[in-house]
Image 1 (tube, rainbow, N blue to C red):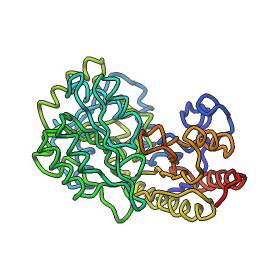
Image 2: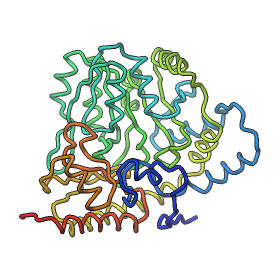
Image 3: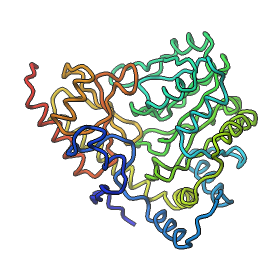
Image 4: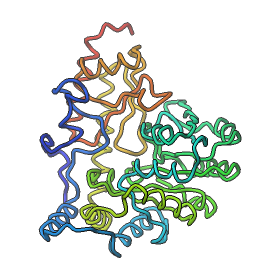
Amino acid sequence: MNCNFDQIIDRRQTCSVKWDFNQRIFGREDVLPLWVADMDFQAPEAVIEALVHRAKHGIFGYSDGMDGYYEALTNWLHQRFGWEIQRDWVTFSPGIVFGLYQLVKSLTKPGDKVLLQSPVYPPFFNAIKNNHRELVNSQLIFENGRYVMDYKDLEDKFSNGVKMMILCNPHNPVGRVWEREELERLGKLCLTYKVLVISDEIHGDLIYKGHRHIPFATLSPEIALQSVVCTAPSKTFNLAGLQTSNLIISNPDYRQAFLATRDLTGIHNPNVFGITALEAAYKYGWDWLNQLMDYLQGNVDYLISSLVQISHVKLIQPEGTYLAWLDFRDLGMDPKELQKFLVHKAGVGLNPGFQFGPGGEGFARLNIGCSRSTLEEGCERIRVAIDKLDLHV
């Protein structure tokens, strides 16, 4: 079945964070929202049909995953990544951010050092600080238009008492799909200094041709026992509102600690529609995902060609995710001035780079999980606004 990703679906008046709250978020209603990481595409038809079928049953009592749920997840991970997991390693979380908070709380102590690599997904910072842990940053190195890890800095900080690292794999917002050699080098350091790794792999299915996602726990049995991998169908199949994620925890001590902390929140089981959607997506969503990645690659190609016509803006080539990291530094604006310009002069709502921490200043994140025509409009708005500036080349 051919999927029509060019179709424009009006998401307004659906309680959409992306489309229904422009005034509250940006201060004006007519902003074109290209920010929060969900897509403007319908989920796979098999998922929609499964949800409709389940809704028609009409009873929505307490629920939990049955054999089909776990088989769909384990088969997906095995067939896509060659990763064989055991059913009892799977622990439910209503979202990966919730899971991060509980993992930091359960596997470290107040005052412990927890490391991240900026620029990175903003909730990482809050998961550390709000749990009263010490935030340690090892900023990525930006060289030759590409981000790489600073291994010397990592080792210096690991040797100074870091207990946990939150890894973004693939990396949001810079679009890196970490290669095996990079992850193995990181893993070796983590084993040497006994650093527990929480690997957020929510974008792991969204990989462009020429790149391959490597789940961190697959590097070695030793690394698997010193790590937790966070997964979800939400980015892959546009199911974020169903709030169903899974943390893969092979270390029984880590798993017991996480479950004890999670259960104190009163959250135990996934919701009935999340269960249904995950099972259908992982069983029947393969062709849809292949078509999606072809379409997203087309959006990347369009963005590259469009930026030829937009002066002073560069794209950091994404290797994965549907998030484009744009470099606006040549405009010479300070971070707040740049955000004001994009919203009030260009009329586009992007994620400002400074929200992603040190190294994000002068950048912005643009969501290309939208129709080509929406992306075209966003690029044109930016081009027109920049052309009106008095810039000296």
